[in-house]
Image (cartoon, rainbow, N blue to C red):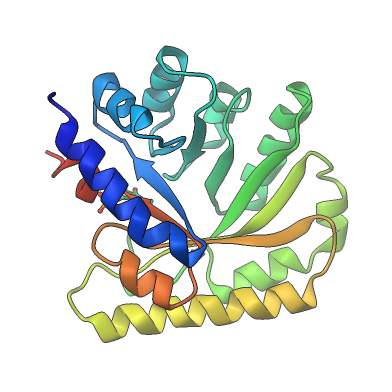
Amino acid sequence: MLWRHAQEQYLSLRQQIEPNGATLIAVSKTWPIEAIEAVYEAGCRDFGENKVQELVEKQSALPADIRWHLIGHLQRNKVKYIAPFVHLIHSVDSKELLLEIQKQALKNNKIQKVLLQAFIAAEETKFGMDFIELENLIADQAFWDALPNIQVEGLMGMASFTDNQNQIIEEFTALKGRFLSFKSEYITPKFTWKTLSLGMSSDWALALNCGSNMVRIGSSIFGKRN
Ligand SMILES: *Cc1c(COP(=O)(O)O)cnc(C)c1O
């Protein structure tokens, strides 16, 4: 079986990750339908994609009980394509995007779950909001009151692309600290504070140690992407 290795990797990772109370998302971007089917057969129901068009094509070809996670940057004009089915949007980084998600969630008669993407890396290239922008957004009660079809489940972050484990730990720990302070300060039905999405193939074990409860793993399951 062509994708047996991916199945084995998925099962092995799940055994290490789930006992920590964390959810494993299989990041299937760039991989074909057959690869996703194989990992689905092994029991996975949470898959992550970073491009809207690829996500839409895969969703229509795969079982309806998959929970699809949009983990990449999302443009406002593309929200409408994923709104009917997307389970969790990890990459929310602006008020304008939230307003569009509200509009499309209303059209689809659903409550859309989202995570706010925090910027924690040293590089300039990563998307997300810094801690001040996040706090200002979360504290804007009047803004949230206008978004009845959105529920914020928590935060997502990506550490710097570096071999320096101490730096990664510092970035993860800072975000966990913010997560906990938001959680204790903003207790409203709008914010459930259930999810901290942190960790990828290279750093998921560090992320779990730092308090992540959702990891997004691609290459360690499916192989190295081109
Ligand atoms: C691609 C991607 C991942 C998974 O990366 P791997 O190194 O392949 O595990 C996780 N999160 C985001 C946002 C991604 O774009």
